[in-house]
Length: 608
Image 1 (tube, rainbow, N blue to C red):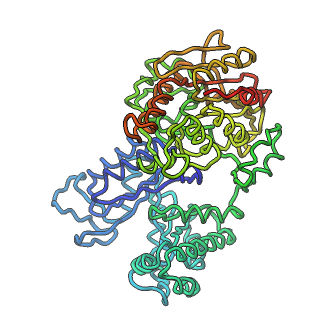
Image 2 (image 1 turned 120 degrees about the horizontal axis):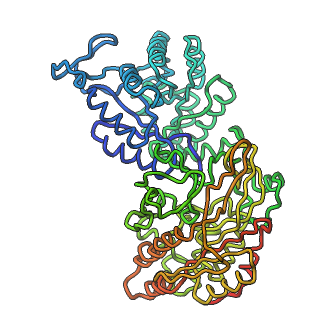
Image 3 (image 1 turned 180 degrees about the vertical axis):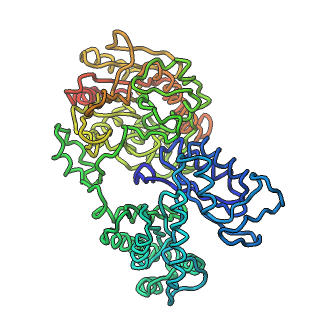
């Protein structure tokens, strides 16, 4: 979901008994997924001392976005806003004082941490009420009281408002206009909760006092016992709601906050349906081919129906949102399809490459070569992996051509992952998709690749990164497992093409090079932007390649071979590949010849 939908942030909820899990999930998302977390913090009966610890832990985990909520009381004596806070221990120390209202925590955060945290607060377009509300609207006085308290929270230091979910669009529009009339000028993000199940929908709307228009109930009641039909209608209701808000053109309402309830498929369907109204516009593959400045291969016919958003990437890879990695600008290309592993293996570095890569063995960079640190990414259960890595249901691979077919099926999008690839084929490789599929069926098992690019605009939907008004470049690159016989054919190919380099190593550590006079670090992706030095965010480092190879070969065993009984034909087949094949990295330094590397590869004969 993160890689495809690219959300501005992901919520992590908070509970009195789930605080450790909340921090674990939030830290993991920040560190490995490269997306900001909005951590919910409830303050009722929370002491100042404990909240100080929590906020310090947030800073340690790189979390700087919080949603301040009052939360539910456990029955302690209520205290009106503005009165002295109730102290269960009777102590007078600041650390033992408790928070009673969200505004108290907003002030506390601003006083103790200045502007480090971005603070969101909750808004209630229909006021704070409890009980059934299908036929009656919330009392106007309740809404005005809600907005009065909301204004106080904004004045105390809150930055923006996220609303409770609602289904009455006009109630939200009126709420926004009334907020503006009270002097609330900050962004207001509407809360949208897709309807997943009728009974859950009824229970939550009753509990939260949400008005449900009769038109919505009329749609849902006839299918209330059919969950699939409810979900389908629920998605349409949410799409119509979002479109109505977009069309209303309300000031400072520029996004949506989806309550997924850990069920993201409905949100994905809603956003897919919204592509005709959200900005930036979506371009079909055939459309953008005619809009870029440099010619691109037309061989990507298998993905003509795919949709690609114009690029908003700051770098070719998704940066971690951890504060200590804020200046990181360069990574080796080898972990492009396993970024979580790279982040985990470099998590304890004191500093990160900025401007140039330098020496990967530098003490300042830390130890990259400790395999024990690499991220043990796993896709699905053993049964799911066994099924995914089979040619057909219940048929494990028995011959080399079966393994080749699995890799080709990944390239064609018929299976979602490989042990070396955490997600599906990257959009930049769509233009060489057909070539890659053919290569894999010839026994060149590709796990990382990119085509050559010469001066494509930096906002290009497929190759762009770094912001507008720039131009990006990249050398053709291909990384693949090959038999010893095919490795020698690649050496001959590189010998005949002086612009190419080859680096190869097997599981035993035997390595060789070809076309390399002095094997040094080389940029494989770079960009030119106004008023900035040339950026080179992706490099190839021979030393880092050897470290990556150790990890790559281990995945044959840990993620594939171990699925089968020891000494079975499938176990022996994977073991033979792991122990005899080479991992080869190929670079074509002539980025002006966009097809030369893959054309040369396709002209090689197959060996087994």
